[in-house]
Length: 122
Image (cartoon, rainbow, N blue to C red; front, top):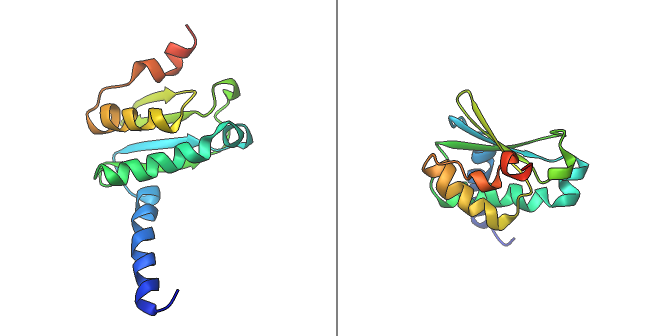
C-alpha cells in the first residue's frame, strides 16, 4: 500500500462485500460452514454467492450469511435460501451451481429443483 487513497479504495471495495453479508434483503442465503461443510467446499460456495449477488446487482434483495451445522453432513455443501416463510435447501453445491441458483432463484424466483434436497434423496 502506497497511499491513504489506495487504502480508501480497498476499504470501499470491501465494504460492498460486508454489506451483502450484513444487509437487510428480504431474501436470505445461508451457507452451512461447520467443519463438514468447509471440508466439502463450502467456503468457495459462500464466496461465489457473495460475489455473484454483488455482480448481479441484487445487494438490496438478498443477504448472504453463514451458519454452523445444518445437520445433513452427507449433502454438504448445504445452502438454505429463505424468502418470507419459504425455505429451499440446496445440497451438494459447487461454485458452478451457484451461478444458476442466483440467476434462476434469487433473481427470477424459480427454484432450481435439481439441486434441492428433494432431488438428492430420490
